[in-house]
Structure formats: structure tokens, C-alpha cells
Length: 211
Ligand SMILES: Nc1nc2c(ncn2[C@@H]2O[C@H](COP(=O)(O)OP(=O)(O)OP(=O)(O)O)[C@@H](O)[C@H]2O)c(=O)[nH]1
Ligand SMILES: [Mg+2]
Ligand SMILES: [Zn+2]
Image (cartoon, rainbow, N blue to C red; front, top):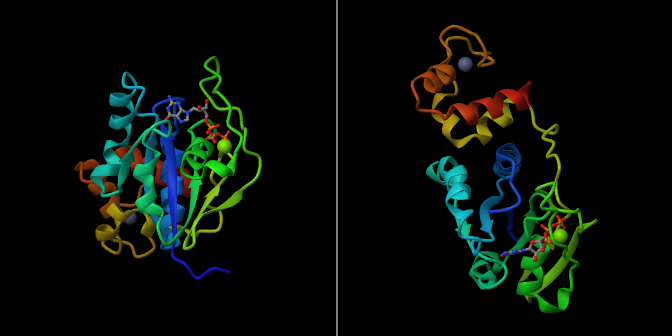
């Protein structure tokens, strides 16, 4: 096994539409494994779609997650510095352009790519298994199949709470030590949601994950 630091790039695109929850889950997984995440917003050449995609990522960028805007078609090189000296894995829904990015950075990769279905507003699950490509002597890049779900079953409730960076300052502040942040009185997290300090959509993602 390589002892190189790993990084995870969550790939989203201006089209097809991406799931906020899937992105959140990928970030939580990275966070819980101490993997530095990077959000790539691909297909920025589709300028009419760009403002809406940016807006959907605004909460995440305000939380400090780095968002790299690019176009795999003509600005893939912007990603290269982030991959240097690491093993990185590209994760994201089908059709976001992960394999296109790989081909742009490593022309001999020859990864299959396919146009998205406009009718379904989704990709066609072109990549079927993960493949590791050598970017240079000290950097590798893994292309992976489009995600439909991102399970976090390996994480317990405590780990999930801590993987939300904006929750951390409130953890341990609830009236009950074993608070589930649901309907308990004196819950510091739900109070922060009500007060607007924690984004209610992010909290809803948390609730869905811990069920
Ligand atoms: N306009 C535009 N289209 C892009 C860009 N990057 C990729 N595409 C197109 O998006 C479609 C899907 O790209 P893929 O690279 O196959 O997507 P993927 O994320 O690997 O999809 P799966 O393997 O199914 O997970 C292809 O038609 C690409 O040409 C981009 O920067 N701009
Ligand atoms: Mg692919
Ligand atoms: Zn609580």
C-alpha cells in the first residue's frame, strides 16, 4: 500500500443536475477519514448553467470547502497542482465528467466517456470499475464509476456529527449528554439551526443520515 497522502475530489457539474446530499455524504466520508476533500465544479463552459450550480455550492464554500471551478474540455490543467504528490480519487454522479478529466490530464488513459442523457438529466454509467492511473512519478489519480448512493454505514452517530465541521462547536453543549439532536429540550444543535447559525438543509441531511 502507498503511504502517500490521499485526497478526494467530489466532482459535480453544471449539468446534469447533482444531488446536494450525495456531495454532502462524500465530504463527510472524506472528513471522517482525514482525507482532504476538494469539490470540482466541472463544465463551467456551460455559462448559462453556472450561476445555479454556484448557488447550490454556496453553503459548502461558506463552510470552508474548497470549490475549484473548471472545464475538463479546456481547463483540466487547473486541477493538476491539487493532485501533486498524492493518490486522489474522483468521485461523483455519472455524467459529471470524471473520465473526461482523467483523459485531459493523462491522454494515454483512454478512459471511455459518453454523452449524458438530456431526457433523463443524468449520465449513462459509462465507467464500470475504478481504475488507477499514474499521473507522474509521485502522483496517482483514480477514476471511479458514477455514484447513485453513498453509504456511510461504517460511521457511528458520533463520527457523523463530528464530520460536519459547523456542528463541532455545539457538540457537548446540549442539556443531555446523550442528546440525539432530535426533539430533546436544550439541544444546542437544533437551537443553532433555529437561530440560523447552522444551515437547515445541512441539518436535514444529518437527520436523514442518522435516521
Ligand atoms: N461542456 C462540457 N462537457 C463536458 C465537460 N466534461 C465532460 N463533458 C461531457 O460530459 C459527458 C460525460 O462525461 P464522462 O467523462 O463520461 O462522465 P463521468 O463522470 O466519467 O461519467 P460515469 O463514468 O458514467 O460516472 C461527456 O459527453 C463529456 O464530453 C466539460 O468540461 N464541458
Ligand atoms: Mg467515467
Ligand atoms: Zn442535541
